Image (cartoon, rainbow, N blue to C red):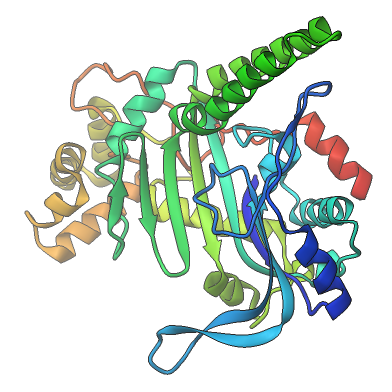
Length: 391
């Protein structure tokens, strides 16, 4: 699924600049008769993937790196910079059911901007893609599984990237990509759900004495029920996001300026999956992933024999208990990387694993970050219908 995107338009003329400058103001609302959340525009930076606003900026400057590699602002042609969540634009939330076709989603975004600004904008295919977030969600039977996995992720290790660890998420930032895994429920409740409840309470106060009070209250109650259901599912969702930055886009598409017309969905999802593998170190197409102590030992003995199997099991046990950084400091580097490679090839995962002979962990035995057993990548019917209009 696609979420946050940053786009830069081709050059726009002075007449368009004048019209758009008049439009650039803050506005928001909800259509209580359809339950649809309306847009909010801002010229400032968005705070994160949870930010529901659309950054819409008309500018004639841009950042450029000089020989010192320090970015400086330089003069440029007049253009538009747009940043928003495609997922939220289409569905009003980004918990599940988001778009998987980038070109159609961008076309919908540009058409939407044209409708609210009443200004003809450049063809969507000619907009430059500066950033795109590709996401994947894992859905479980209960929320305790998500909490257990997030707690285990705090020992995750990504080469040459320092982790940023929070209560319900972990993030690894780099110059080409940023990967993030987090428990969706707490994030959704803190931002979108809280904002909606606040709005509903305000509307109840404002419309209490109106003639159509009963109809308005009914619509607000239905809207609240809908978001209660979304919140319940969000608490059972573990979300993975891969932010693909401009530098990476230029590399994978071999172009200095990557336009919407250059984008290939399959390539973007492949990059996202590769980043997830680098973080989780789980990939085994020939056999199922195992993480339970007795199953790991049995797998290693069958593949590598008794002596090497025991040695690999010892390394696996340290990885389970202490994580990669500490384990790497206890054995020689060549041995550590060789053992890690052999464990990955054997399908022995050390994330969310247990040292007990019996599986007491609530994480399902067959769960793996690198297969689709628990992935929900279905596109919501609302998204399908909206994109069909612009197809």
